[in-house]
Every structure is written in structure tokens, then in C-alpha cells.
Amino acid sequence: MAGLDDSAKWRRVVLWAGLAFGAFAFFTRVARYAGSVVVGLLAVAAFVASVVGQVIWSRRRSERQIEAGKRSGKLSVEMGLDFSCLTGDWRTMAQDALNPMLTSGRVPLPVLPVRITAHGGHLEIDKRRSFLLGRAPFHAEVSIAEITGVTVGPPLAGITGSSITIALRSGEELRGTVSVGREHAEDVAAQLRALIDRRPRRAASRGIRVTSPAPPKRTPAGRAWLLMMATLPLALIAIVPQDGVAGYATAWMAVLYALWLRIRRPASMARRLAIALYIVAIGFVIDAIGFADYAATTDQLVRFAGAFVAVGIGWWMMVSSRSNKDSEHGGTAV
Image (cartoon, rainbow, N blue to C red; front, side):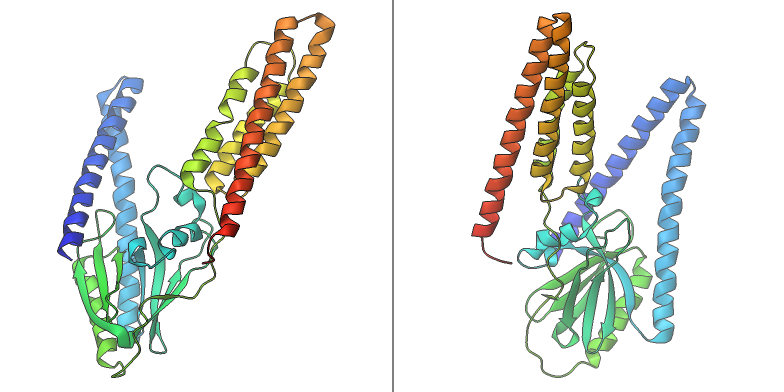
């Protein structure tokens, strides 16, 4: 646990430094465009107030849930589950259960938002499902009889809140961050320890068991970014001065489509983009044929070159899509 605590402290230092740098950059930009230091300070103050307000609202909401659980005697707590505490392929597969918008950016969501409840001698871990978090399910179970201890510490993710670590007989740990202070986190830990005291004397050691089906496969974030960037050369060709609009319209529609797919990251992203680029090639050819009436040889060459590039990139995308599909079929099932 010492290593985890040191890592959590380092992450908080980095986050605080990032927030301070971001606030300063935001201030300088607003002050420069507005031509007023006061306006810049007011903008930063409004930004800080919105962030602090959101943190306070989230903490108060979690505190009310914990207090309600204490009164009813039923454990129910929302937590950000650390992906690294899951075993096998679920360390990465659980991320695909989230809305891809939360995992496609430069700073992906580091935890899985879950709700932990006690039911029938088990702790049940269910992903919170909503439009923002994603509709794909995630369900895991831990036998209360396997729990050997519960500890409270600093947050594993973020700069506020507390962490709760549930140690299991198998050597695994169920780790997560709650958005409340240490006092309320200790109340949750006390509820868990009370459940341990009432646990059966013997139970098989099975650890964390994920029982939900595998989430839909998605294109890896790095590859999705590469596929999106591969459409930009066509947009550059399309902006060369010309009278035709078919190539221009289809090329920029392909770029926007690639941007949308980059956010969603479906497994078929490469194949879909390849089809879109074939349509772009047709648009370039239509423009090139239209230039024949005006003897615009240079514009014709540019449009035919654009069509050639579109077909080439589309062919590469289609081949890579098929090779990835073959490798998936050749691998072991999860």
C-alpha cells in the first residue's frame, strides 16, 4: 500500500500543478483578448467557482447516500473503481464499457464509475449506466467471506475524496475512490467491517469475479487517431482553388465523419472510413471530368491525383481492417 499511497500523492501534485498552469494560461488568454487584467481575473474566478461548486455538489450527494445507508443498514456506495485491480483482459475491456468519449481524449477517465452494494453474502459491483457514462453493462461480484480487511487512504484518482481498499484472501484488492472526506469514508469502511464480522467461517477463494458479457469491441485510441489523420491530406487537396464542389464537399464530409468515428471508435472504423474515401475519390473524378469543358489541365491533374490518393488510403484502411479481423479470430477467446 505504501507504493500506492506514494503514487496517489504524486498524481495529486501533478494534477494541482496542471490546474494551476491551466488557470494561468486561461487568465493570460482572456486578459489578452479582452485587453483587461480584471476581466481575466473574473474569468478565472468564475472557472474556479464552477469547479469547486461541482466538487462540493458531488461530495454532498455522496455524503447523503452514505448517511442513508447507515440509517437503513444497507450498504450502497458510489465509487471510482481502479481499472488495475481487475484481472486479465478486464483491465482494458472494462474501459470499453464506458462511453468512448470518456476514453478517447488525451486524458482518459482513469476509473470506472460503479455502485457497490451488499446482497446475499456478496458485494456486487455494477457500473453506473447513463448517456454520459455509456449504456454497456459491467457487473462483478466478491464474496464477503473472502474479505480480510478494509483500509481508507488518500484518493487514487483526482485531488479530492478518499480511497477505500478491500483486501481479499486471494491476494487481490478491490480499490476505488469515493468523493467524500476521510470521516465518511471510514463510515463506509465500518459498514464493510460489520459485514465481515457476520461472514461465514469458510468460503472458497475466488477473488473478483466479472460476470457481465464482454463490452463491444472498439478500435484502439491510437489507431483511431491515425485513421482520422489519414483523411486530412484529402481535405488539403480539396482546398486547392477550383470550380468543382463534389470533391471539396465529399472530402470535408469524410474528415467530419472521421472525427465523429474517432470519438465513437467502433471496431469497424477502418472499413467505414475506407468506404467514405472511395466516395471522395468519385467526387474528385466528377470534378476532373467537369474541368474538361474548360481545358483546365492543371485542375484535372490535381483532382485525378486526389482520387488516386483517396483510393490508396481507402485500400490501406480496408486491408488493415481485414488483417485486424483475422488476428482477432486467430486469438484466444476471452
